[in-house]
Length: 83
Image (cartoon, rainbow, N blue to C red; front, side, top):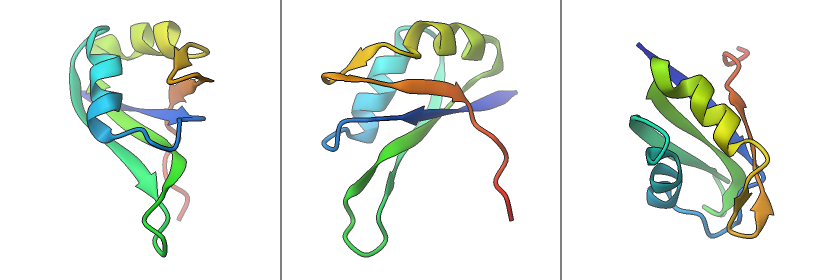
């Protein structure tokens, strides 16, 4: 199984590879994505990381509030999309 983690307050220049690399040291990363503005293509400052279920809690504990590119990131389990 996999869990999706929300990652907020990202630096504007963060790439999906940067996000994957940051979380990989704490467990298995399945995928990552940065959310971009549809009109400009620029980062909206947040993204999602899909991780192995067994590593999710450890990753949230390690990364939430940590310094990432000079900013204090917010990491928690993503809520289901409202539709």
